[in-house]
Image (cartoon, rainbow, N blue to C red; front, side, top):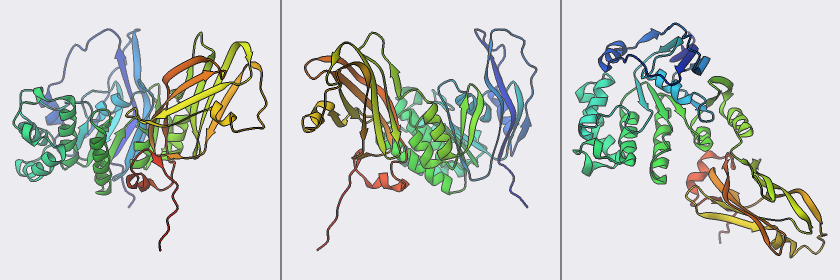
Length: 398
């Protein structure tokens, strides 16, 4: 007998009216009653006739099989968070059908599902109760949750006094450790230090290996590639592309314009950075009032913490290139292809400098953002490397 989807979404649409507040709200108790057991619910609402409205989602269809890790990517405003809020029953759709088989745990926004006047300890048990778990089930996972979150000394402090980082630590720990068949996670890497972000990714990987179904929304293509087997690209509220994770990620990176920038009233008019296989290419279009013999482009690449990783300028290479011939052009394009060293997967920023070898014309600090994906075919390699650069080493044993 073929396996049935654990999540099925058919013709899902959500319309918002701009400038108006909702006239009525659904009580939490109503959600709890509706959600008891394995609920299959069909939502349908009449289409609004308001002119000042937008469609956050429109005719979205997909299925997720038990044990799959599905990634959702897209630019801000594509509808990713709205989709997760509908799946978690925070928001009702305008029209469409959703089928969910199993208990759903979610981590959507910092503090979502926490009562500010309750302590961390009380909120853990409250979340378990909302998910339909018994007190003994939550107590069994209690120590693991506290150990993972690392907030033991603040356990009996009301969460309204927590920092955003503490909120995120406890919220993720609760969502990941309580026994739910479906886990919805929205931008878990948006808050928290680098060490905890890495810890979260490791836990999500462990959750997936346990056979639980995960819906993961993130702007980190490295995290999507590492955790997900399939992905869906949302664009203007509709599915633009879906399938195996790597083709979807590559399409998103190809379409994304964050790695390109146009400058006004500058000698450099346009600049871009992108990954080509296992190389990084930086290019800039320049236009000057006078001819320049050397279009002097310089760059520095920084990691996501702002630490400089590597940098170079064209003057350094021209000094040792005796065959160089002056260009003497007012405009053109200069580019550099970086072959080595290789960068580990992750996000990076680029600062650019441009001049003629004698004077500086242009300086744009951290003007470009790009993400390295699959620099190495072995996904676990990054965990064995300290730093942002993959060194090429020769080992010798005697």
